[in-house]
Image 1 (tube, one colour):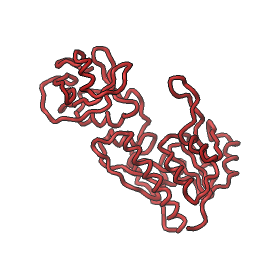
Image 2: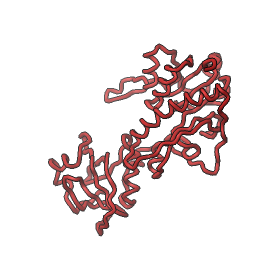
Image 3: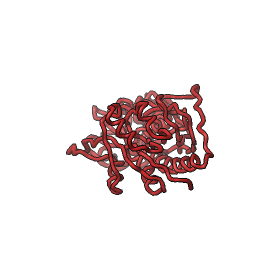
Image 4: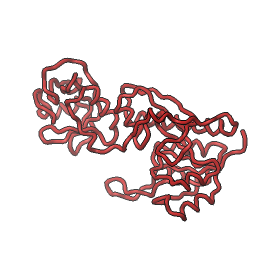
Length: 315
């Protein structure tokens, strides 16, 4: 292996942790970790360090947590590190041009999509929501545009029909760590060349909002199933029944035909609660009632059978 790289790492959530760990375990030097400022968390709203900061502290790595990278003083501090690369994964702050140009070989992003399929903040959720059967990791050379830079490497990952945002995120986070180390080695050996993206194939993966988790029962069973999987574990799909907000954690689509109106309960039993949709039906498997925890539908029916009577309608 050639001379190890001096690397600045920028990331915040759990998704970025495997990549930071891989860099720590590699011959490369992580000279600084950038992560977002501590945020209030939990019922007590106690200031909590990001998962990336927590890992950096375990290894006594230097840490910076600026509110923005637009300040000249922050840009100067970053430039003075004289790093070879800045590795960015789910950092959450915009990198201005002076930051992108500060490292000797620029900034590399570990992105959870086969670019340019899903550019933006929520590529994993948008892929599931759209019914994509394939996603993956792109190792991209960053430029000023939003996820528009040339791609060094892409690694594919099939999307299982039961995949949730959480399970797919776990797979891709580990895949991203491996893909980055392989890319850095290829760059060292002169064996990698970034390929420009096809602009005509790009889609924007907008940030997820809580309002998007409201279920429209006039959609097909398949569409609602994708929505439930995409928004598990956040923000979690919901619907109203008897003026109570019911959160839906797990379900499965059924191809049965029904004359019931969309949202109407057409069956309840140990196998779950079956609800009519615009096309087909949806068997609800795990729900969360107000003030409660997520439970299997068969357990909820034991105590709340009256709430889910056949003929009642979700709104």
